[in-house]
Length: 292
Image (cartoon, rainbow, N blue to C red):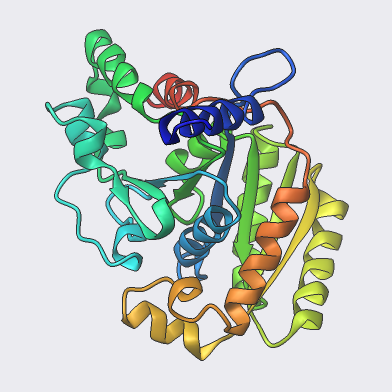
């Protein structure tokens, strides 16, 4: 009989084989940017709960909270971190010192205000930071949670990703701001496709009708192809979860909102990625090139 250690080694080998593409190289994660035209539409709550839903589906997920100065993904998971990406780039902290491990092993890197000072970064600091990122391997998804609105920073993070998800609600002001965001993305030729999630809906019909109305306007005036990922119901359990600083998919896994998030995660898993993916180091090289 094989001893336990040998069995574990064989299991690890099988896992590595699964995670390699036909060329023999390790698969690289899909990089998704989640943004919105305005604040208060539930973007960060969506990011945190989507990440946990994907993690439940045996995917390794890494969140980069790129909402500079206003990020609250950590708070939604019940943490108050002492450090952020700034301390890794400009200080002596390691990735392990700064990255938070959330529910089911979801990893979160708080952005803080570090990106706003990237013009100060030296070549040696850049290379040192990229080498520190090497410890973040074997990821399936990197999800960037940006600030809301149309800013140079938000558009920069949209440019860094392979897939863009825009969060809106059925409210006319939210739809107008989401349209304005896509208009800027289209004007600067940053992306020609985006996915849409409609949050705080009465039911699935309202979600689909809201998307159809939004999609018709985009088709008429912009050169961007939209894809509907689904809706998230207006749910009292979601409000209770935020107050408890606990993701609703963890605290209320049978709630309507949790079921909606799982459905969206299933849809994302079933979609073919635009590219083979990029490593977390590739992502930050792009960020440095854009912001520094």
